Image 1: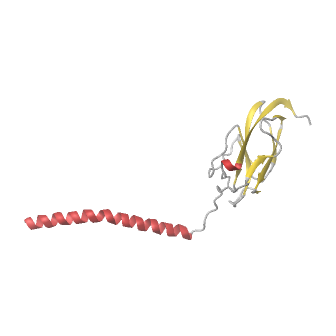
Image 2 (image 1 turned 90 degrees about the vertical axis):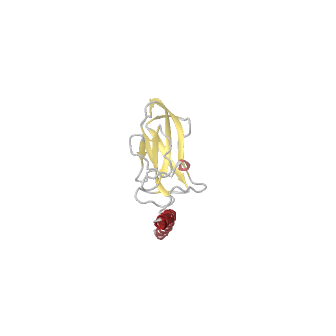
Image 3 (image 1 turned 180 degrees about the vertical axis):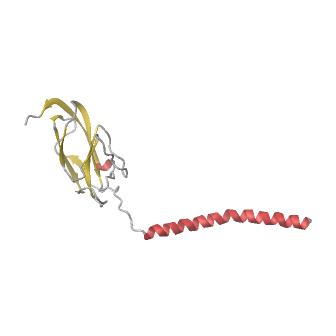
Length: 168
């Protein structure tokens, strides 16, 4: 009886020690297997990498400028190509203007609403009608799926909109 109890205790001790190692080994194998699976998949285009010299800018507006409605906005980009929405292509995308808001963090989709204006057809100019007073305008470049390139592909300026209208 005493021998059976000792054998049972030793058996339980060995089993409990062994079970801690097995899941770690299995987890390690699973991680290696998943890494190998991902290595075989085609790499997605990383549209958040910004190279030196790539930037967006307002062609015709300066920070602090006083403007009249409708506000003509010309959008420029250096080091990337403007293209209509559609696919994620490296170094390509289209403009967005954010009224009274900040840049969209890299990798996040630019919302579509009255203050986040999309130019998915590849437009590089527009006219905005803004209430008189100070407004911030943020130019944001994003890929063909509206995924933001982040702060490095954005430019924010402030304009003071006069109550006068542009005479046509």
